[in-house]
Length: 595
Image (cartoon, rainbow, N blue to C red; front, side):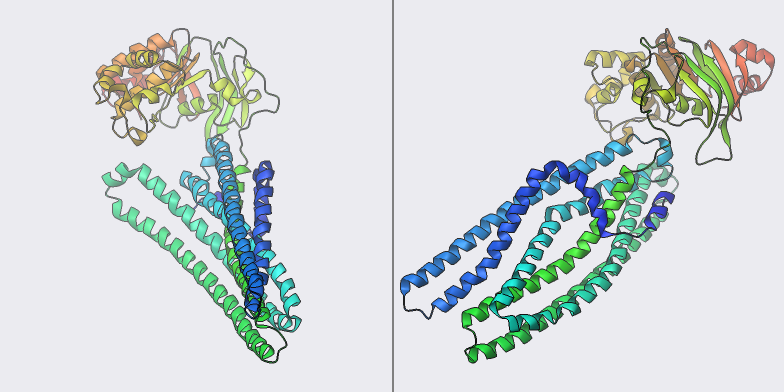
């Protein structure tokens, strides 16, 4: 289920220069980078010195001075020990740097996406975002923590090795360089193809993750409609496409590796043949030939390693771009540069002034069409009407999940757009239509409403929400783990926990969106009494289809097709014999649920 956002962005070309976007995350750790570079340079230099020591040892076999031979072996051991220490330091500094930077990237991306409005999530699946935070950052970790240091080390060895090859034998070095163009061409040609395939592979992996996340989060519905086989087939199809892209990427990379290594070592064999003839002609010593061979192997290994690492860098470049897309994602709802403070104490007066709003996914249908509504501080207002009339939209706009297309929404006389969202949201308590339960204990789910609340306050809120009895009956009482999305609880139990959470928040504005829809008659009566007590002195908006829950509201506002069509008390609206009266007859006379 590819999203439009990613489809548009993925059509762009991907360049290795995208890795430059990682620098802002690496800049704070310049000391660690310096230590890593110094240890890297040390190991590269020691590696280049080692063949010189080997040459001395080999040629030392012909010396008659035993002490001199011993000194050559001792020098070789010291160089090898220095190489071991330098390699260990390089690994420590580079790996630590990679882990630190990737942790910062993950936090930065999460901090960004958690504050984005629902409009963003209409364009991209949650599983896609999670894939970028996990899979893509893992790729970046492999590059920062390994590939980059290996690439730099091999680049130093390549340059230094070539220089020392010239120093050892200019004639043989020129022969080696004849194969360089033949090696570079496949790296460039196949590298472009590899970059495209790497990006395609990552896109399919992300889509596979998004599809699996959506299905698993709705697994009961999938099973209830016997949709398992089709879900398995859909996931299998996406996974196979991901594998096919990976297979083509692996094949291309393997071909490039074969070509590069074959050309390099074919050249080395030819050079060795010429070198052996020079040794027989006394034009160079055996030690010099051994030294040349070691440098040639190091240079060849450096070229081969760089060809492989190039593919890793391309994959990481694609992953970096995908993460940068999230960090730079535009949001339609943003805090102002110079926000106004909400007056204290918060009274809870809510004003809608000629508000017009269309959901981004449905631009042709007005969810609200010229709505004007004043809710006085401490007033309880019920919003009723058919499904899709605009009731829940009122709740979402009060929380500023969206901004209206026109008109103004105010809290205590201040436009919501002129305040920080977390400032005014801190004074609002919400019970959503679909209660959200987290994978933790029941106690912590209620405490989510006010993290600093005591256990006694949590239990008091549970009593007020008619949740205390069933919570104490659980195996570990309030500390019982309720499972992912509250899978161990019934719908009514989840709703009562959500109500307890809102009660604990103790906010001056209370928003109830179908808060009692999943309750039985006895629990609904208990919760209604709790809500009535809670609503005293608070501005309360109640969205309900069940009109029995709103009869005692100070005022009932009737919505139809995004407009307010009637306002009044229950008795007055029934007497008008309009839409509300018709809904009331359906529920109280025929016993049917309003639609």
